[in-house]
Amino acid sequence: MRWLKLLSAALLVILMTGCAGDNLEKMIPADATGVVSMDVPEILKQAGMIDDGHVVLPKSLQQVIDDNDTSPLCVLLNDLPQMGIDTGSKAYVFFTVKTFGRVLLVALDDPDKARRTLEMREGGDFAKVEGLDCMYVKDNLFAIDGKVLLVGSVNKAMEISRAAKAAKGILSKTSTCITDNKEVKEVLHNGDAAINAWIQGKGLKTILNKSDVYRELSQKMPLIEIFTESDIDAVVCNIALDDKNVEMNTSIRAAENSEYAQLLNSTLSKPSDDVLKAIPNSMDYIFTLCVKGDSFVKLKQIQQLLGMFGKLPYIGRIDLASILATIDGPFTIGLARDPHLEGEWNMVLATRSTDPDAVVKQISSFANSMGQAPEMYEDEYIYQYDNKMIRIGIVDGILYLKMLDYEQTEGYAYEMKPVRDFFGKSVMGLFAQTRNDSVNGYFDFGLQDIFNGKGHFYTNQPKANATLEMLRSLCTIKVSDGFGNEEEDDDGLSSFVSGAIDKLQPME
Image (cartoon, rainbow, N blue to C red):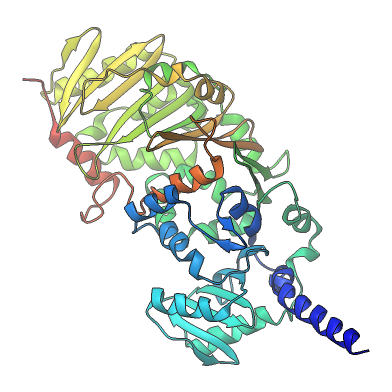
């Protein structure tokens, strides 16, 4: 019977090593405001990052990481082979309004490796607190219990013992579980996707408020609050990976008669791809929003922006409300990093207007009143702005404003068929492109209607691994990416626009 005892012991060891990953989902409390599940083995497999059961970084990915060592994602990926994670288990992130705002749960196969790597990276030391191995650095608690790593970002500063007690409560699974909610369970158990997310509508703004980027964006662009402060029930997202494509499906769950639905139905217009005839194909990012201008300007968020704009010196004299009211269709912005000046951007605005000639006339009259008479060249009004030229014109009924520091010789986004097809069916959409060596990565995400959105990542190389290339592209995104110098002390929109007036001057 000795063999039976040995077999039983072996099975117990297998069950003990496997239960960490299997039980993570049960640690997520029922009152979590959102949860994201990540199929770690599937992600690593599709990205070609598993070799004989161990995490490895492909040379092409390591090169990008080395060139962008300040990126948080690069730091994470660089540490991944030494983290001792269980490459056969899912990982989870969930959000709460209690002790922790955000919690990461990861299964480990070597807790000692995880402990050493985290101590080196965070500059702290693990110690026993409330029966857990804990390290508290800045606003983050790192806790290891058996073969589970918990990383929790506290909602406010507190003693490590209090944070450890909250972590212990999560790890002990003493409360009801998020998957008691059948809707959430169905989302998390979508076997076709490697990443599944469910975010409660009323918790969306709470989650976003933790982001400095969102807080700044909502101050300068109150329009975003249509989504974050609406009566949306939940947002669901599923991301499927393979070596050719990355597909994202998003569902905004709200009642047909909700304020959200009524608001967007009354303000959104039909999509159109012809606006891309004015957007250079070199833009890093292209964003579009299809609106009915006369309804759009009545939104309280837009009225708020117009009020701010009207108080600005000089430029506040422009009747911006009447300009916006002429928009009927896509309002599109193209952005590209200025290759010559750090922190500067080239930009193009384009929209379909019901009276583009009147808009151009109003802008020209304002510029003339400021002593900024334009130069006319091939039906374009041309001004000088710092190191850039501003060109204002109309093409096929599309009103555009180009702010470039070079003479445009490249073609237009309209000539890129996948991009044209995408914008032709999206009432709201974002297109981004990155360039790594000879591989270009393309990402688009758009709402086909007010409830359903689709995203897609692909490359210009048929043999390229799409999942790996997506990781490489994400690694190149800098936290400091923005529309100005982070070190400058400014008052937001006011100083940005008044500074623009100072730099606007006629051509020599």
